[in-house]
Length: 355
Image (tube, rainbow, N blue to C red; front, side, top):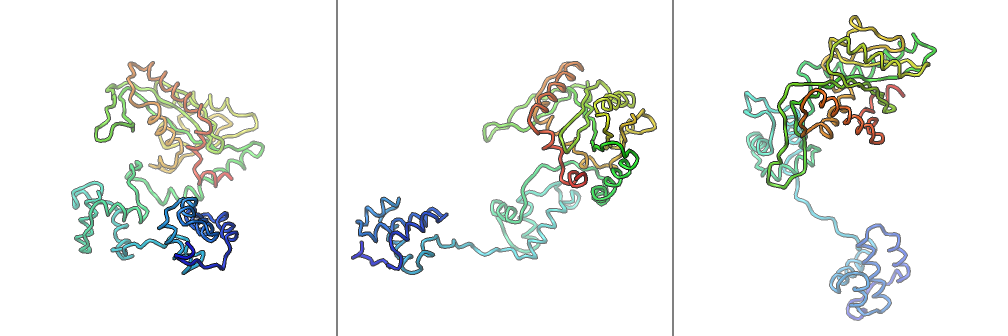
């Protein structure tokens, strides 16, 4: 090969191989090995074969090595077509996506890629195919997701204030009132489970709609649960009804599980059976309320979503007893998964408050 195409000799074959051994990019390292083989006067076909390439590829590498040295052994940056949307146009598109459509004005309740293509054409006279819009949206940091339910009367500012101030104040006040106790933060909620069944996501053949058993009935049971996010500990009862008397039973059972030197702050929503005036609250428990219409602040809500998707969908449950049995078994399966409860409930803002 030396007579056919001279190779620069400022680096010896040994130095090229040393460089190749520490080079993280495999293709550049292979080219260095091939050139080292050729510098040792190995036949071009053998030099290329031992480096895992053909002769023409090795020749191209030699040309680039002669021109730029070791830097030439890396792949050239690939060219990309310039972005068709300016920064201001992308910002306008992002704002429209975040705001969402108005059904009365836009005729849809959620944007599709085709809708966004039409909006861009009408607003900026730029035409996109829906598949191209996918690339634009991903580059902008968007993905298609299932919306998380939120109450129309929720106060986002109040929720943010709660994360930063009121919860910390509640913990400080409770600690001051019980200086001889170890303070624990718990979140409590109830879930209704019945034989009005639900379906869930499942794997199925592409191009076909997956079938799913969905029972229609009107019998119910209720899972009462309190979870400690920092440890994943839980106290759970499955009850046939929900009211203040049942909540009293749950609180009494919960209080009995606490250590003698512990005092629990239990965060609840504003359900009527959480009103302290209707309850007998144990001495080692302090009830506190979350902001109104704010289920997203309660990590136990994520437990219900996981429980239903994983264990309580596609089921046929004949009566209340069967519903209770299914709930109990689902909870046993849930807590058998190592650290699952903590993974679901350890919201970063909660961990920051209690740290």
